[in-house]
Length: 227
Image (cartoon, rainbow, N blue to C red; front, side, top):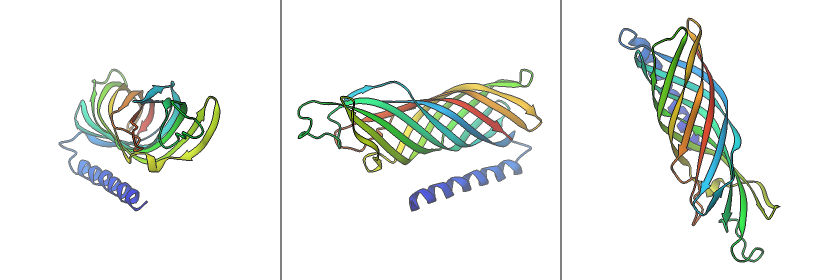
């Protein structure tokens, strides 16, 4: 808990420092913008020793920030709480495997309910304005810090675990590759609505359990407002 408070405090100080820097350099820079977002995610998980079982709905909400260092280029970041849910089928997964009850190779159905404090670091490339609209492409790194992890487990349709905390069996840090595109629409002088799609492709193992390797991914239907 102390570690998480230190991370949040440090990130907030970073936002405030960057905003102050941008305000002092208005002749050189094109501005610093803050916004709010709340949007659904469509997540899935892929284990090494099994298979994924389709998409699961999640949610993301929090702050957006664009540091525009040129007319058509910006560093885009934020601070969001993001839920990434996913379903898998895995053979004898630790720590749920019970040889006394289910001997031999047994297929377990698992649902991951993961929640992260996310801080993306991306480059956003924007077109010139076409009317009140700018189109953009986005590419960069996702940094996720585990703040919640729960799981449902069943065998042959029979539930053996329901909404159990698995935080001790998951890794604290998750990294992902971000690729996205969308548009910003000006609704007032200093206000614009943004929408688009983002693929967040996780490339680090989310499980710390022995003998397992699982990665999770999601597509975000991005909706936000910049002020």
